[in-house]
Image 1 (tube, one colour):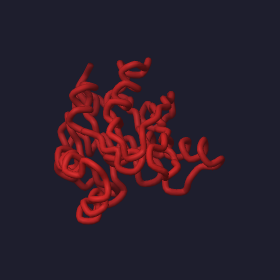
Image 2 (image 1 turned 90 degrees about the horizontal axis):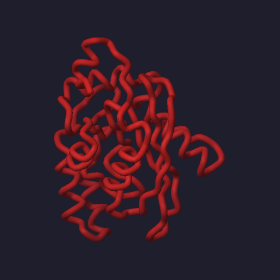
Image 3 (image 1 turned 135 degrees about the horizontal axis):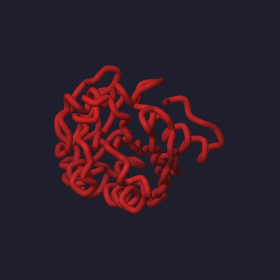
Length: 195
């Protein structure tokens, strides 16, 4: 597979998957649905659907298996996640995800995260130190207006250029925007307004 940098240089279509969690019940142990939307550039091509545990520790494994076992794996050049957490604080091990999938993996955020508030919230959960470590393992937070991102398995400058090409409407790449809209519609009956 060609590198992300080579694909950008050749102006080739980037195939990407964007994962976002759907609205969920807030009781302990709830299942949280996760939508994975595959796009060629900004055009919808397909979708995956899975479940993680609220505030659990299975998000990295679930996302890896969803993509690895799908027909889309060989086509996808880049993996995007809406933030580092699924279903509350089920944190993704970004370096492990990138190693497992052999693709650049990127956590995209709409605004600079408040690490002080996050660390305080983690005090209410088991394995606080492990969760905090996962946030740090994700690496430096880069700004690429209109969003922020962390990346593993990819050059930040190249990833930033790719994110620009993958964003059509709203404040996040199209695959993440669609994952959010679809997850909201499936769970609540209508799409959300945050995308």
